[in-house]
Length: 492
Image 1: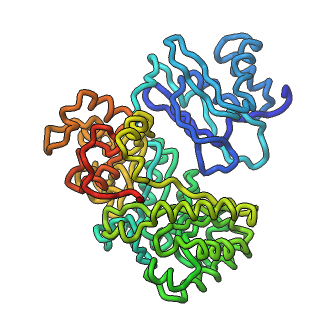
Image 2: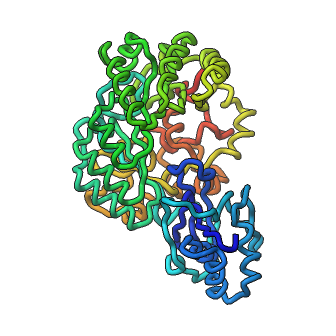
Image 3: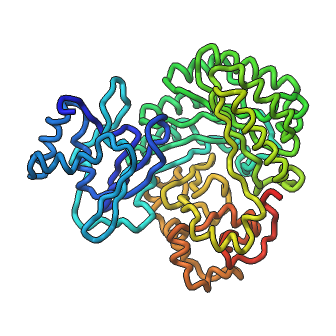
């Protein structure tokens, strides 16, 4: 190790946020690590910044030792737990707070590693770090909804396409926004739609995203043209995602409102993607129309002939806020379980395909006993805490599925910077749930309202699904005190 070169794992990004530093897992790099988001001490970030792989480990360790004015041997003891560590570990602070670090923090440098460089000047330490406030001073993640145009008209679509049918931000505005977000400290940026490949400036947008060290996943239902596939490959993008729910032309016609030639076009596109070796992940949405086991087997058999397809994600359709008919469209729990069982059997037949089924909402998750157990353990909502969404008209909202709902629009990039929007009175007020009573929601009188709302928060989308668009301030349906639901939004 003495003469080897070590670097901060490129899977992990650092960014100052007030008097603390964010340690963030960059999930666009495969084989890197595990999902991670935590706050670390600025001095720990300074320490990690010395390992750039430009000189041997011992030389960079010596520079770190000199900066902190402690002996080489002591610094080596401090750094050792970070070097190729096989699992996460914690460091206790004087105040009793534990700072956790993910596995493989410092790894051996390899050629052509795409990695950011840090220096001690990137991190300042002026007072004790705040490890407890969840909301950031600037978001780490932004999703840009480029447009709402589609080649398909999926009957299970969750997007509010009508609200933005004619909206599309100019290419230049999007490019300017991407660069502004990069300068401000956004660490991850995605693009979505609609159909992202139908934006007239998609090539320039992708080029600029990559120049800013973002690597968004291109998700499409289009039969990708040879020219577009070649362009994507030329950028160095290593994979795309294609959605395909069936190989039956009549099922696709009913599900996506496409003509029967669609599957042949998709097959031609996959043939070429396979030819140019552009990895293609597949997303499958299950409905009553395509949850037949035999049809599913036919789809997997079709996909297995392509070497570039290595991952298939199956997702039962969810409740749409903008389309009716969930009860008639959604597969039953029994039908989903039959597909789950089928997937288990298919793994032996197709060892090169990693087939996974996503979690889904079941009715028994909302019994009172289950809610009492699960609500305290719920995942934190990151909307308006770490993440923001830019809509096709420039509005900024806190979650991609809330779209035009006025209570969640916190600004517009045509008139204000992202920093101004993020720190606006409306955004901060929404985070703190600092409203006067506007409905009969029990949340206004709840004794733990602040702890709940500024702690893990609520899933605003699920609130709307359960109670309706006008009941945005109602409790999370998972809360044990939540009233009876207006809508059935889960699988039965």
